[in-house]
Picture (cartoon, rainbow, N blue to C red):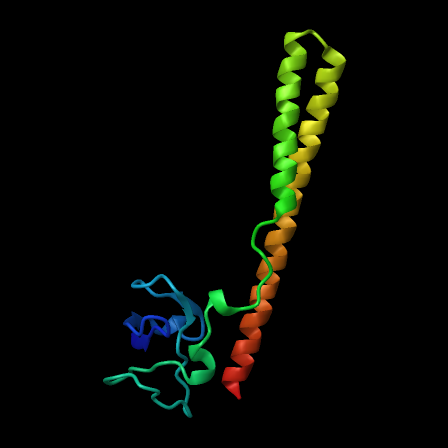
Length: 145
């Protein structure tokens, strides 16, 4: 176990050594930061006690909130979900009035809207994860210099 200070709230946190170099969440402020990595040429940047390290300045400002990430959720997904819900209401109204052809068309429209909403969410999440991973790699490359 090592002690690493959170760059947001400066609270010392006990971190298992296998988490060094990974993103961890501070239990005090729930902020994400990169756990300090101990190497031969690593200097103590303000920790206290044996085995206590804090990230150097290049990594200290890292957190998920200050990365230039795309939005996590898409407005198109919400729009398609609302369209699907409206189509479900049209299906119910059509069945009450025994208009089966309109009910069938609205049901197929609802299923299509929900399917495309799901796909938009999946691709938005994939894009967000790839951007976050790329930003993390840039931080680690800067840290290894």
